[in-house]
Length: 184
Image 1 (cartoon, rainbow, N blue to C red):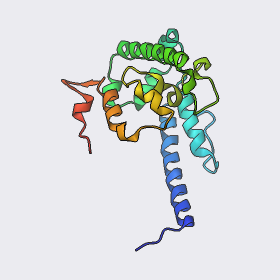
Image 2: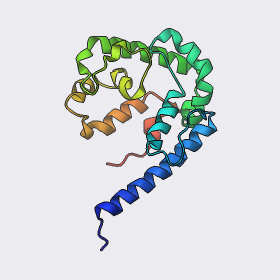
Image 3: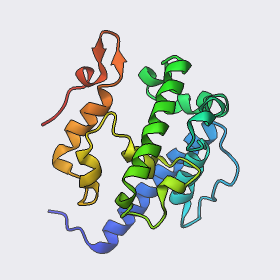
Image 4: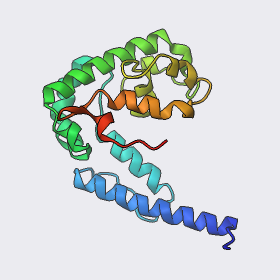
């Protein structure tokens, strides 16, 4: 039986991170994100590649800027999306983004005490952050999730929450939820 020691674990983790970093760099280059990419030896390469990828699609947290985002970013961002989302008409994506931003802004103003994960007041941030702002959209998710975020993410409800999000998208005659086989 193999023994895993701390050094072997760290080496494996470093190798996995390096491999994922190479994939991230390839993704960045494929969509034209080449400015300020870190060197292969950079100890913060993974983090900097994630930031470069996320910062390549800036979206002001204001529904009136969605049309500009659709012109500037959607053609490249759609290349990274699953086919069912990438092939949606642009008007549908733009309408979803406008509604999403309106819900996020309203919920951040109404639930400003939820910001336990960061000292920044998210309702006053100018730019949308998927990692911090998406959770404030209560359309596909129940409002219970916002309250449960303060107590840690309810992993026992993760599949149910993901199904509710995916249920918004249709593939042919069935919802995306029905086209995925779920493990229990």
